[in-house]
Length: 293
Image (cartoon, rainbow, N blue to C red; front, side, top):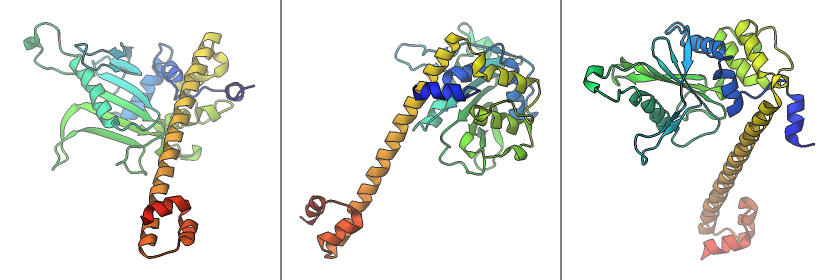
């Protein structure tokens, strides 16, 4: 029996941070109350959402040479505000640029195809909410798990434009325990982060929205076709993680080897014998002889 089969038999609930599960739990008619509740808890009264409508997730460029965007989840509320909900599992070099590109597509799509003078650039709000599963933004404090970003005047900090918002949820920084869950948002994030660890729905995560979440996330409730889709999505996540882990390991090895060469060069300059350099750096005799030339 393979590893994938073993995991599915011992896991009661599906992993929310794979493509199939993320869409099942946040982007279906059944999951609307889950997403509405999550967004309202995230905005903490700054916005109150009563209903949403899911929209297309594929936004091709206006010309063939222009890049398009494909969102994980895209929806609009009753006020016309646009919400892009994304999951980012691993570090991406230009992640900030990607976030701005995604929001720019949601903004540019608002332009009418006909008479733009009557429109007068009356934009609706655009929000990007991104769950960062296995990495954090390099310049964010480790003590915080939500980065709420808007356009502001640099020297005063006053908000310049409040209709464009980027919200990054750094799951690695969310380390609260059940007894430390004081807000509904903290309960939601804890449920998402630890969903695959539960054997049953815990009492401290109760209520209609949580009941719906655990019901939709239960592996036994998936149809045969849905299980196949989930397994493919899960395998893709594992494969991508293996590639990332290998790249990180290779980078660490390369860094260690480069440091060893730097140390060896200094020892050669100071007249150390080859045997001592080998002991301290783990370099081969051939590598050290090259440095001595």
